[in-house]
Length: 286
Length: 271
Ligand SMILES: Nc1ncnc2c1ncn2[C@@H]1O[C@H](COP(=O)(O)OP(=O)(O)OP(=O)(O)O)[C@@H](O)[C@H]1O
Ligand SMILES: [Mg+2]
Image (tube, rainbow over all chains, first blue to last red; front, side, top):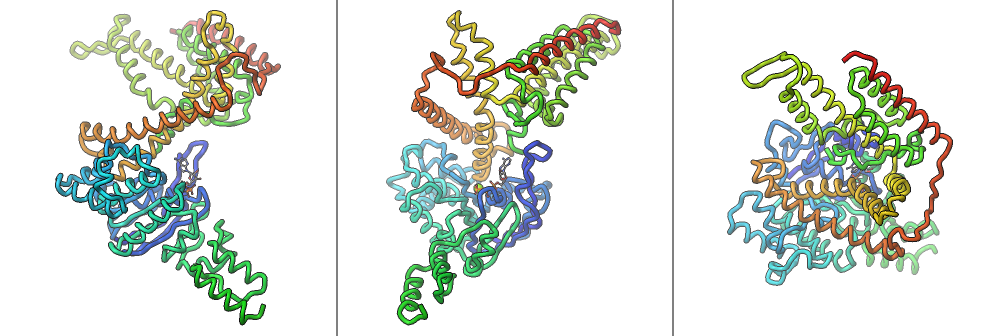
């Protein structure tokens, strides 16, 4: 599904003492099957932008088109179109409510009006997709799960609606390294196997470069930079101007370059970086 | 629109106006005075003077009037209801409109108008008080003001503390409700479409997570307070001592004087 955002502006509490222009004239185009990273410092408007993309917020001005269908059109009942963009909110575990994991995941598909049979099928399937064994988790209470498991269940709840676009907002925040890795692996597989369009918000640049093909950098509600991951993360200066630091490996490489080494900066793979450093060390100018 | 844009009660807007700087006790007493005054005023001139006085106070506070008026939205229904009941069921005065068994009399209409006016201003005065006083100041003030009730074995401090906490968490819980509502709508919850029964069913998906999180918050807060050795008001000293300044005295005197003037205006004839 193609997403087009045209001149999106969003103002929180217009006319109030704390009026806040969270987004300011943002235009964006995301093609079917892309994996896009959305980054930016705290309060730069990332969560606001994705809430506009799934139609849960209406822009103060501007339009959002999903495959050419205008989400902001007030005259059409758009709730079904909107559900094709599955948004996993920041800390999604706070929305779990049902008595069992299966019931909770079934909430979305039921709201779509699907048959009981179809609903159970999707519940099983989504549990498998996020890597939770249905037999072990189906009947558990969501409130007895670990933090990482809760989050996986929340993601399964969105996947069960078969969205054509998956948006995850800081989905690994506050999880242990293993929980992080599990979730990221699952998202990667979803993108690869199901050709899902994925938009990922994250503060962890290492996470971003290991997964996404294209990044969009926001700063104070405006797009500060966007482009291919390798390209955006090769320019330390302009990135710093957007309030973003380089991922770990380019940071190391960049320090070496400053110390006189002749190395490329935009390498994100540890082994590749190690090989280049070793090579430069043995045969280089240092 | 976010819920916290609609409900203004309990939202403190930091500022540095005269009203912000006054001692909370003075503000509380002044608000009480205004409220009592509201019940003594019975004539049009009195109401007009009261309104002018109140608008002057609002201007001095630096709070946008538009924002203050938002506080009325949740009780708009109540005000309208009061107006209609008063207008229709009053037995005094001359009939000015009759339609079947519905009779509207001139005195009834006046009364309806004044009653809704009173109710409106009552809410506005209270809202203004919470807008210019931080919750901590407010409850500290109440705590001190009513500490004499301690003699009657009324746990003044504990009640004040509970009030602070309740006030403090209104905006937080509203924001949280907002997020949960959005999350469930994103899962297709029928909160904004369909008939009332469908909508109510959707609300379960909002209420449960909200309760869970409210209990969690309460628990965390209790632990945080206990780990800092909070054990009620007994023997507790204050970090910020409250001192009455000359401005407080002046404000009190001016408030008193204005109260008398309002009453004077009230008795200046004109029904
Ligand atoms: N409900 C709200 N009412 C008023 N202002 C808000 C509201 N939600 C967000 N904002 C403001 O809008 C701006 C953008 O917020 P947003 O949540 O989109 O940022 P973000 O990029 O997701 O930040 P983070 O990385 O911290 O999640 C912030 O300055 C924030 O304070
Ligand atoms: Mg955010």
